[in-house]
Amino acid sequence: MRLERIGSLELVYTDVDEEWAFPEGGHVYGILNGRLEADGLRGTIHATNLARQRPDGGFTPTLRGILSTPEGSKLFFTMDGISIKDPTASPPRRVVTTGITLWSSDPRFRSWNDTYLVAETVGRAIGTSWGVSGDLYRCVSEL
Image (cartoon, rainbow, N blue to C red; front, side):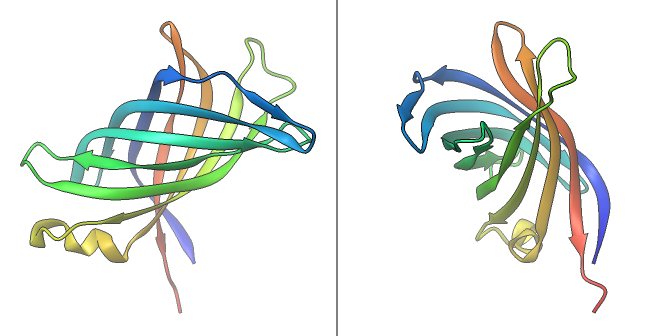
């Protein structure tokens, strides 16, 4: 398999519940808005995230949401991954890698139903909130 860069992604929290601590880690719940621009696909995103914090400080983002295209179509999507604190960064940031799946009943976007994407993003302060931005890749099978 190889990765083919096809665009960019940005998501910003519009609402975040405070962290719920547990002995084995914690959870953070939030609502995000953003944009996705890719090869033949672009639109705005509205999503929720229930991220589990592991005892080592890493998070496992689990996003579910809707991508709305300028043509009026809706694609449902999932984003699951890992968020690791960058110990050398100043100001603080996290390196966030996620796998993304999309699905739509619109014939114009059905090819995305069979596409697996990877986002390589950086989590940091964006305006007065926190979010991620970075590159979007298509996984291309070479089997």
